[in-house]
Structures are given as C-alpha cells and as structure tokens.
Image 1 (cartoon, rainbow, N blue to C red):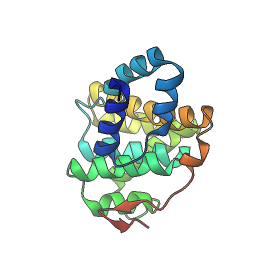
Image 2: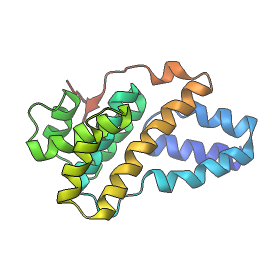
Image 3: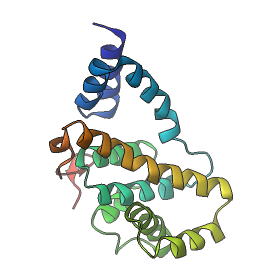
Amino acid sequence: MGLSSRLIILMENKLGQPLDYLRDIATASPAAFYEFLMFMPFAGHRKAAPTDGYFLASIGALQHEDCGPCLQIVVDQAIAAGVPESSISAALAGGSTLAPDRKLFLDFGRAVAANAPEAEELRMRLAEQLPAGAMVDLAIVVAASRVFPTLKRGLGRAQSCSIVRVTVAGRDAA
C-alpha cells in the first residue's frame, strides 16, 4: 500500500466518509493528489471567525451545493468543535429557529455560494460585527465548500454528492 492510499484511509477514518474521488486523483495523477493535499489546510482555515458562525456559513454553502456527504463531514466537525447540536439541527432545517445573529451566518453562506443578490448586504452586516480576519475565514470556508462537490462531479462521482440523510450525533437532522 502506497503513501497516498494510507493518507486517504487516514482521512476517511477521520472524516467518516468514503473519499473515492481522492483515489481517482491519486491513481490518475499522483502529482495532482499531493498538490490537492496542500489545499486542505487552506480549506479548513479559521483563525478569527466565531466557531458556530464559521460552521453555519459552511452548512449554508454546502446546502446550496447539494453535497450530502460533505455536509455530513461539516456537521461532524461542528459537533467536535463544540457547536450546539440544536444550532446545527436548526441550520439543517432551514434556520428559521436560529437566533437572528446566528442565522445571518447561515444566510451569508447560502447567498455567497449561490451568488445571490443579497450576498453583499449580508456580507456588510457581518463585516460591521466582525474583524476583517473573520470575514476572510468566512469567505474561505464558503469558497472551499464548492471545491469538493465540484471535484466529485467532474470526476464522475456525482452520485456521491447526492442528498443523503444527514445526522446530528447519530440522529436524523431534520
């Protein structure tokens, strides 16, 4: 078993999802696989954004991308980071029961991912409350949310991006 295979197995064990698209990349273009690994720390960058806001923005963006397995990974990461399960469940159900200041993050993630007209107004509202570094964190997490589903679809792994039943701590989310 080569290094790339061992790395993929480690990531699958950590994330709890199959990463067959990475096997496709590693097999077809080992150089591309190792270059993609360098993207991963950037994709997970968070230094200044509030933890729950960061994950709510990510959930909003991933809901737009229709990537169930990626969404499950982010839900699991949010739980591990201490985001209340009630907030995660509320976000997955559309966000109507989130506090307005928390829903703003979810709506921002969705709007930016969708290039919706309200994205700039939501960005401005967040920027009034957050330091510039937090806005960078949020922009990165929303942008990165598009990379993984897009790669899967481009490699013929679109079925792995289908809507799946997302769970919060082992229970159906919504």
